[in-house]
Image (cartoon, rainbow, N blue to C red; front, side, top):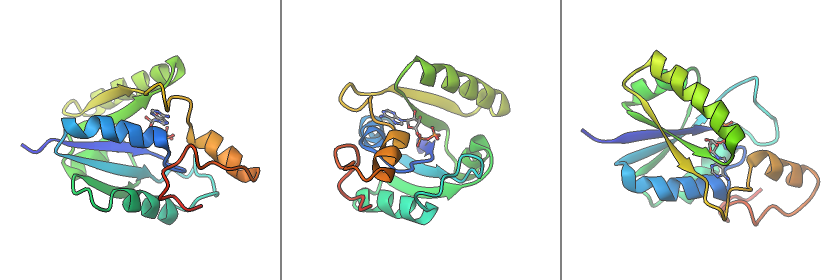
Length: 153
Ligand code: ADP
């Protein structure tokens, strides 16, 4: 059976931290679907869903193991729909861990066929977060050290 993983997130925008998680986990799976969750409560208006998707597609245009999609609703339901057995999440801190542990355990109860695989952030990129990148951009700063070069803001 093909090993398929979903890497869900807001990716607003996709950063070098996200890219590092993909690079380190791609060897574990046949396919990774980078899945932009459309969540109205968390939605910020800085980057449209279309821009976020196109930027990630540009980064992985030549990589047939990686697909980019958007989804709405529960991540486990979406995983079932696309045939994914795994969810990938990155952990930067103990705060991330506490939050992610609860979600992964609740997801296990919702669907016991789906496991969450955690990758600890690389020391080179663990300080990067999309929210800080957004702050830099909103305030007219240069965020190019934190995002892939294919992202043209
Ligand atoms: P969400 O809103 O679901 O947290 P994000 O786009 O902020 O979505 O993050 C998606 C995933 O990437 C999360 O698992 C998050 O912990 C992880 N992540 C974000 N930034 C980094 C980073 N610098 N290093 C490792 N993982 C990261």
